[in-house]
Length: 267
Image (cartoon, rainbow, N blue to C red):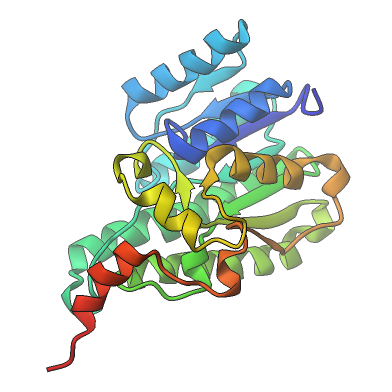
């Protein structure tokens, strides 16, 4: 119960990695704000974790991170209602699959609103709360292996995930004097409600991973808790790759090589 008495806010948390991060923090004693866009699924996710724990540790805070003013207000409201903000996990993000030559402005703008603007200013609000309350807080941002290695049809998304790494470095520099650390987790292929619908996902990615397995949401959540732990106070501006070593060589599964290879045929 190393996070007893700590307050944690996680965005994009109604399912998948965000949900598991909330769950793990709650299992270890924290009071957790579970934020996601849809009020119904946000409340259901919080209730599910509370039912497992047999106590009310997780509170629903619905908000669309793409609404910058809304997510900033939510961060301040959470801190006011829970008596502070110790740990902020900026997990929310959306993906845009499109070849570079076919990307459209509407999709690009939506991606930037969530992955960049929402992340940037909600993190700013979290830092202000930590500074005002003299909390030696933890800020953790969500990146991806696509922020390190190119992946066809993900140019816009990859750009945001690479930018997240640089944001953490700058914030680690600017916020370190307040006792705040800022770090990044960068998952690779990870099983979740979304990826499990692909019958080739697990076998394909396991076959190209040095660890010979595909990651799961708990792998990512445990890395987040490591960075949030008071014992990790001297780690800041860093990235933890959670990819089973995939970025060592970065091969694609055979089914994706076939699928994407046809798009690279030159006329």
